[in-house]
Amino acid sequence: MAQNIKEDKKSFFSYARSKTKSRVQVGPLRDSCGQEVNELGEMAEVFNQQFISVFTVEDTTNVSVPEPIFRGGKTDQVLDINISVDAVKSRS
Figure 1 (spheres, rainbow, N blue to C red):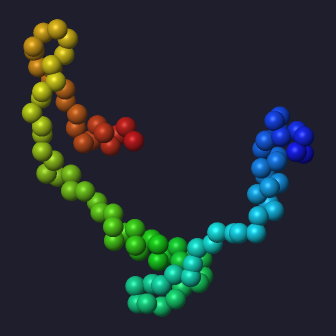
Figure 2 (figure 1 turned 45 degrees about the vertical axis):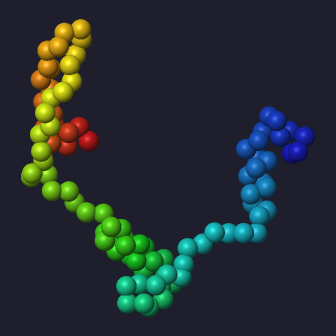
Figure 3 (figure 1 turned 30 degrees about the horizontal axis):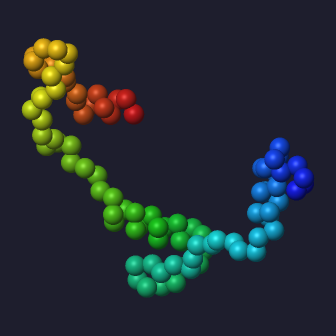
C-alpha cells in the first residue's frame, strides 16, 4: 500500500485513519436546567434550543428601500432595478 501511495492516496489515508485511536464525540451536555444530558436525541434537542435562542426570524414587513445609485454604461442615467422580497423568496 505504501508503495502505491502516489496512485492511490485515498486507500492509504483511509487505512491510516482507521488505525487512529482518538475518536471525537460530543457530550455529555448540560441542558438549560443544568441537568447532564447523555442520550443522542436529548443532546440534539439541547443544541436545537441553543440555535433557536441565537437565530431569529427577520421582520420583512418593514424593509427599507435604498436609493438607486447604480449608473450603468457610459451615460449618467440611473437604471431602475426592482427587486422585491417575494421575487427573492420565489427563487429559493
